[in-house]
Image 1 (cartoon, rainbow, N blue to C red):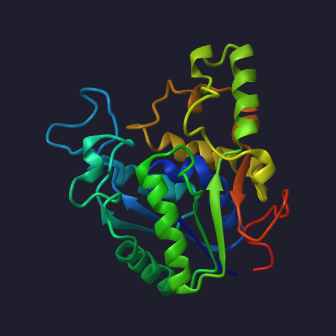
Image 2: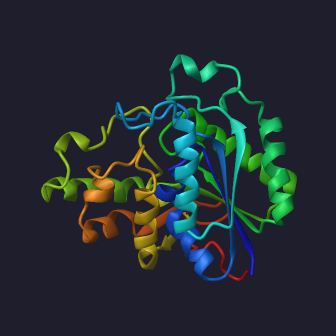
Length: 264
């Protein structure tokens, strides 16, 4: 058996992009380790949601550990940086944020975990962080460098299939599951995900969707019961989230892999 390390920016990112491959690996007997760069201090939360005196980061740490249990995670670690906020916000450049962290410093922290775990596979994000969030972009930079430092043999860049997402959202609008305003702007400067033609790995995670949705439900501060993640009918959820998508340099063109842990 082997070890899969998934590296994410904030609590809740893990279940959306890689929850299925995590549960799949765990069910197949592999060790699954989750590393989170920040504690998600700047997430938005409804007024009155937190207990008196409770900090959002405290709640999110609890949530990600609960999500990890649903996904079969054996170890959860934080790199210790602060949430940088959305791109362009003043918080991006505050001391201690992940966005301001020197790549070599942060990569050394992650590489230490990769070495401790003798990681066979690590997941990061694509080079624009899937949708341009500074912490997600930094996950790509830090994760790729850490894998080099640790000699981790397989590195997959988690992404979203841009074309599949748009098809799914258009269908969801037609089915009155989400409002038309939820459709992404095709002219956005940094559109979500990666074109289908550039993706090299597609993993069918439909057998693990109940665990993936349970992990989402473990993050109520960020994924409330009335979000489309949790209100979407099972068939719609299967269409939208039943495949997880990755890039692996040196592979392709086209989908050449369907299992991150194949042969391990």
